[in-house]
Image (cartoon, rainbow, N blue to C red; front, top):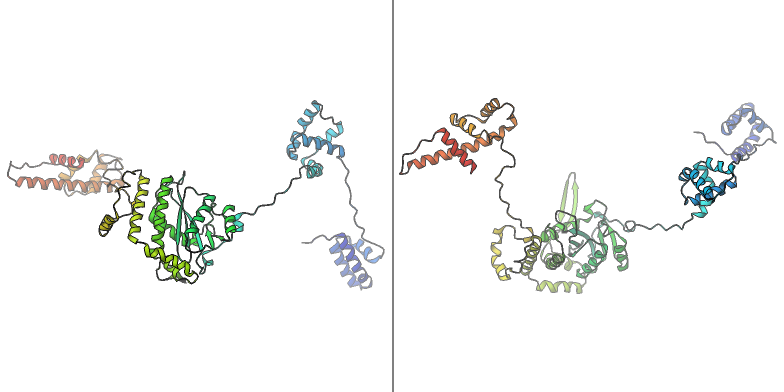
Length: 520
């Protein structure tokens, strides 16, 4: 596609080709002329005159000015009208100009000459914009605010592959909701943090999912961890990705990273603890109110000791893919406390602080306290708080420990009321009205099939019993035959006893007995 060259380029091209053209042969002149005409887009005869005459020049085109229609008076009038209309846009100003001019002239605020009035009304919105451009630039100048950088743009992303083998102190944090089946209203939340290196997990209940409470909860969690915290990694929850938490991390010199959106595997360590720790000890029911929050806090103080000192966990060592199969290798199961005691980055003083509670903790006592807190939570969930204080002692708990497996689910927060089996119909029985008649047919023909009986029903009741109800009829006939057989056997057994002569049961009598048994 040819691009038009500028006049300056044409003049430079003319000076470059003129000397060559004047000393060239006839054939070369033709080629030079063709080249110049193709580039300059001028007439061939004009090109010959330019290349032959040294005095001839391509004169630059002087800018032409069109006839000025709108004088300064029109601009002044439009300025007054624009201000009177509260600086609206040109399209709206164009629509309101006739009524606005009339109103201003009626109240003697404006007096336009007929020629100026005609030009003002004839101006298009584009013309109004052009005439008011210098006025708007000065009149509506505003101080531009510096565009704020979003917190998400300041927080770097860390994927699951970026962790490598971090030292203790780098945490993953997440929320666990205790809203039950509904997220409506106010309920408790758990702020959970786990150390990627050791798996040490801490948790704290929050009354709401708020960024200021997140900072307070994170400060409380940092005091419970046995090693200094170096960084945190969160998901893209708005309670985490905000200026409040970002400023806190910058003030405390914590490395703050986030996972990718909709990629839960980037936070695999904390997601695993959400289920293995929080849901395992608390369950999925709804928790609301300050009493439930206090009970949950007491439960977490027992759970953190049990999980971190007595609950071994697996840690992934390597993962290799062989085609469609993934092979995983794990380290030997160890508790978070054992991993910290074996890590070289933990100081001797910190290891001594870890060993002190380990020598004093009783795992069965912890389990007993956990069960009591779970019972209190379950009572708060159900509303039955009368028998919360009447809990068994530790000795009673130890005595029943060998037989607890017989009770099934022993966690009070996970027990569900035994559901009674359904013994009622959810749909109306289509064969209820013809039941006695079908029983008479079965008495007359004990070997009759359900399909043959279905055919008799369809012949007798046209269009009432479709073929899709054959399976239902088969179930009814199976139940009726079971009741009929039981009635006949009981009648024969009664006949063998000492007493009156047994009565032979006829077809109609058997039908009545069967119907009575079915109703029962």
